Length: 300
Image (tube, rainbow, N blue to C red; front, side):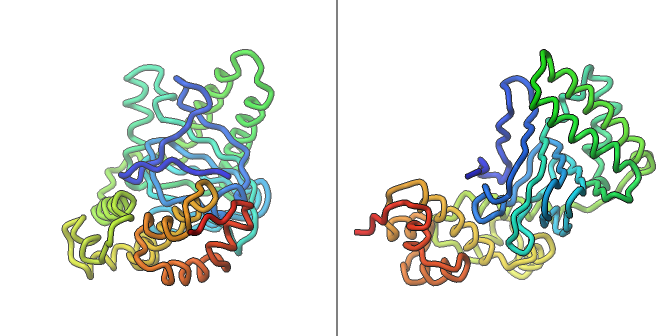
């Protein structure tokens, strides 16, 4: 089972394949993620996705995409995003995550060819289907990188970095019109959303209220609800409870704590309410969930 390491500011800690080389390449199975869904997060790295089997819903800054088989996606740095199952079906995909600094052979190159792209508010992501311009180049770059990792020939990382440079050249060319104009974008809503998500991740064990979540971003409760609806398409308290349930699911399968202890540690003051919304979310009780995962029930 895959578990993302999420910091309290909602940023993901990327576990690179090798220390000192900011690159992570994986052939993933969505069924390996808890509930076939990644946590809402962001990171400084660029993310490349290629769907090899099935389909996946992908959420970026309040926008929903349906990635079908053989679709590609490039997610720019610092975007709030997550992927999750489409119709509860499984999905296989190649995922490549790399820090932009891997492209900077010198400060001049980084300043001229990398920073304008990652800092451009108009480039949140690039989505490719079979009919999109540059689709073949993007797909071939992603599959080549995975192949190079699998073969692991001597100094294969150099070939991967070379492939990333060629891909970056393609992306720059495609976005030239955006890069040549000054994008004036009010991202204050996204900034506030990140603050509130971060607050929830940090304080989910406490008796949080809508008022407290809104106060974490210094806004009213009504504006808080509007921002959650715009970017995450759900009320703040629903997001809070879903995160608490995800943490509880992890604890049920990775610890020997009792159901009551887990409920309390995740911010649920009443076991009956915890069991009720757990059943609604996962289709089984916490005890049944633990048994399905072959973890003994340690309720006292």
